[in-house]
Image (cartoon, rainbow, N blue to C red; front, side, top):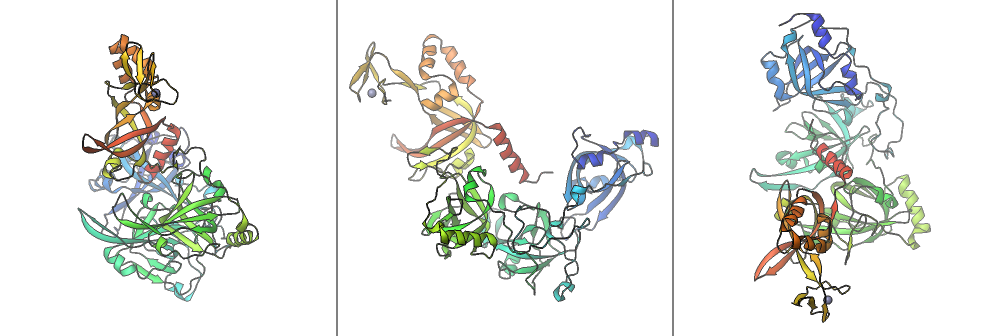
Length: 609
Ligand SMILES: [Zn+2]
């Protein structure tokens, strides 16, 4: 073990902290720093002890949070004040203007010994672009109901509410944006912008219930959920549109973004002692915050994006009941038609209680927050359970639309986004084509009901059956019937009542495809076969006749390639047995850029550091 400070100093990657936060290309990937302080943080009730560690790169120092699974390094005194460490896993976060490094894995470099603070480190300087005025722009349109400019603040946490009678009891009002698992005692003052129905679950781990609210203040939004007892206690207290004080203790966790339409990285889980109190004065907290997309602009919005939309209600469909394929539970559904002054109309579906109780008259202006864009029918919209509806909201966009509609919109014609490029149209127009994994296709029993189901799946070819990969078909135009060789050079089509000197071979292949969840046999017709084999069935038959081995090679060369398959699942009667057949309607290559983006978005939802 060396106790040579010069060697330690030389090993430290000076300046790497600022490189990490500015994400400089060429930065050291696993930088070495010195640990200059370790402090335990009092655990949240029911939580584990955590450690705040200060690291020094000789130019800067920074406060970091050590992941709980690294606690043993502190307990075993391997991580000590003065030692050198290499950061193996870490993520850089900016919470408002504050920089926090979360350290998930470190390696202690014992061989360099322990030293007094090396170099002359300064706190990591904040750069000008970090000092954004409060609030930071999450939505481009600003927000409705609170237009006044906020003063520039370089140290915004915690801020204090304007003095008022109720606020004195809540001295330490935090902006929502400052809430993190590392904030201790806090109160937020926020408007409940949406409240879910109570949802119940029942699985092998037991049963329970929950509800969620979206909370909004000047700085941002956060989702909060109450489970079981907290669901009973708090569900009745929350009203959409009202303002509440909410105080810790309250659990702050990483947001499960797949269940939320909010941008916050965290969410709240109410605890037994969480204080929720309706505010006396309801002003000073913004109403719902919107960032509208015009209906004409929808084709440029990617499928599955969550947006806000405002329009005039042109038409309201009847309430219908459908059964969820995923949960087997019935729920209400209602289709609305919205128009705006861009001259386009769009269909928007509302669900559940919102559908059943929807009583806004046609001609009203309606603002929707949190709708999902789908490519069904070109472009259509679906209100998320975390979304909200406001009829005739008092806001400039609404007044403008109302004026336009009364003057000219009422008698206008509207274009739709049906059949824009990128959608596949079949006999009955475009179809819903949800993306499924193979296990979902089976679990959701697609194709088992009276009507066929359509889906797309991303899968690779595992195996192509070599026998009967094609059939001889009629040469007449538009007739693909199977022909029979009645004499050499005499291929007869019963349908056309005609003999042809030779047939045209067409693919009818059984292909086994697989993804990470399972395998599926699908049948491919001629067009799909040409795409995945790279030649016509006629050409392949010629090869077969001279060299069977070469045929096997060509079929196996097609294996392991990944395609996007669009399929139809349908119940089939075969020899008095019913079974589902999966027929490929089209196949296309992967768009790797789009697929990567989709995966990046998906991975982000899991908050893996
Ligand atoms: Zn024919």
